[in-house]
Every structure is written in C-alpha cells, then in structure tokens.
Image (cartoon, rainbow, N blue to C red; front, top):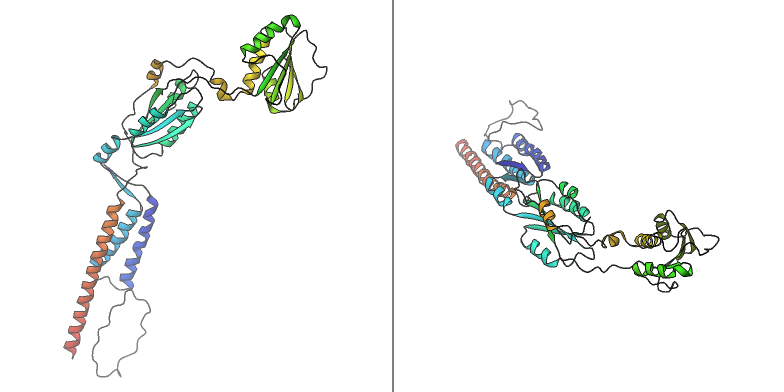
Amino acid sequence: MRFILLHPAGLAVLAALVAPILVHLLLRRRARRVPFPSLRFVRPANAAAVRLRAITDWPLLMVRCAIVAAAALALARPLLVTPARRAAWDARTARAIVVDVTPTAGDPSAAVAEERHGAFNSTIIRSTAIDAGIAEAVAWLDTAPPARREVVVISDFQLGTVDRLTVDCVPESVGVRFRQTTPAAPSLAEPAVQINVHAPVPERAVADAALRAAGQESAAPDRGAHRRAVAIYTRGVRPPEELGRLRAPWMAAVAAGLPNARTGAIDERSMLVVLDTPASSFELPRAIRSIRRALLAPTAWRELEPERLPSATLAAWSRPAPPIGGVDGENADRDDRRWFWLAALAFIGLETWLRRRVDARTSEVSAGETVRAA
C-alpha cells in the first residue's frame, strides 16, 4: 500500500496555516466592565496597538488548521494505492493500435473495431511506416492511465516493414501483438513520367520489350498528359551534342540513380539520359527501373514487394501484455481528493458549532459578571 501525491505543488497551500494561528494570537477579547466610583487616582497607561495573547480556544484553533490542511491535501491530489485498486488496474488494458495505411495493406476496419472493443483505453495510429507507428504508440502508452499496456500492429506485413530490432526496442512492460490482414491487390499510382528509348533499328524490338516490362509503351512523349518525360539514348544513336543543366529536383533524383550515365535537361518537364551501352544490355532495363523508382514515392516502391512475413515469425515476436508490476499510479484517472474535500466540509461545520459555543459561553460570562456588579 502506498500513499502518493499526484500534484505535490498543492501542498503550498499549507502556508495558509499561519492565518488561523495569527487570528487566535491577535484576536481582541471583549473587555470586562467593572463599575468604579472615580478615576481620579487611576494612572493613565498607553495600550499597545497589537498585543499577543495566550491561546485559550485550542480545539477551535486545531479545527481551523485542519480545514486548511484538508484543503491543501485535496489540491495535491492524493492517491492511496491499495491492493484492490492495483488489481482493478491490472484487470484492464490500454491498447495502442498501429494501422498500416499503405495501398496493399487491405481493409483493417474489422480488426480495429475488435481491438478497440476489448480495451479500457485505446488510440489508433495510422502510419505508412510501422516502426515509426510503434514508437508513437509506446510514447502514448507512457501517458495512459494505469493498466496493462499493449501495442497491436495491423498490417499485411510485407518483407522489410518491421524487423526484430524494432520489436526489441519496445519496453518489456508493453505487450506486442501482430494481426495480419489479407493483402489487397496493388493499386499503385504510376509515376507521372513517359519514358522513350532511342535505339538503333536492329535493337528497337529489344528496347520496346524493356519498356513493356516496365509498364509503358514506346511512344512520343505526350506532354499534355504527363508532367515529366525522359528520353533514353543508347549506343548507336547520336544524342544532342549539348546537354542542358538539370532544372528540377526530380531530374536530380533521376540523375542520382544513374551514376554511369550522362544526363541533361531539355526543359522544365523533360530530360534526356545517354547510356554508353547497347539496348540489348542489362543497363537499359536497369536504367528504366531506376527512373521509375526515383519518381515513385518512397512508400510506393516498397509496395512492389510480393513476399510477406511468415505467421510463425510474427507469433515469435509477439508477447502478451504483462501485469502492471511497479506502476505507481502517476497517470491515474481517479484520485482520492474528494474524501479530503468532504473532510474539509465536515471540519467547517465543526468549526461553526465550536465558534457559536464559545461565543455563547463568553456572552453568558459577561452577563453574569454584569449582574453581580450591579
């Protein structure tokens, strides 16, 4: 059993305890009236403006201090971690659901609804990179109320989307599960580029075959339909004598993927690539693939991977959500401050009763002394 304060700064209110003490020390009492025949022989005296008096109403002072102390503890958000409360925390689960939103991940809606239904607290993290999604899920679980903590990853799990190192970076206090969805047919957005190959007549059939394998037909660039065009010149075809300077970032990306070729710009939307190899060599299909890969988004070309992680591998990486163990309740969704507010209200009622009782007793004493003096 532990007693902790979720907001210790609230204890600063305890400084107000000096207020009731000062009130009792500086409170002026009613002077007792004594009939006296003459004041001729009474020497004058200067009364102090502030005089400390002995505390006589100790019960009333203690009750007033208790009101301030109860309010300060309530503002500090006290929490008593009992075995029953810890068992209640251990019976619930905080779950971060990482959903793969790449085109081939399939429809995860049914799996997401099922995982959210069985969780005490949950969040959905949609990401095209599973490793980044898992890191965000762990950060969210660190702020979740006390409960068993678990990360659930929903994806088709293509090769390369997640590895053992990513799973090992998840803290041991967090469970990990993987739910593999049915892969969807690839519906990748084709890069907005038209590739044309200029090859000698005997090798044009080979060049056309390389283009068809890449999903394009050999044709003149249609600049109205395509924002970008790339012309490839192979050995045996004379390219333009001067190659213009590259004019756009996408041209630099294409050139970076072709270190053994000469590149240049025609205008802002088209460029040319000069290969020092025949069209029948492997350099032509390699160049076509490099061009398309440079113009595809990073998440798009990864979707071309046909292989998926085996279910046995995902099961070996999984682990159940462990008991909460040493969770101290710092992020508890409920605390015990209501009981201290109730105690403060009870002390206020007791203080009112004691004050009225003291006032009544003082009035009776004053009235009795007046009667005896008369």
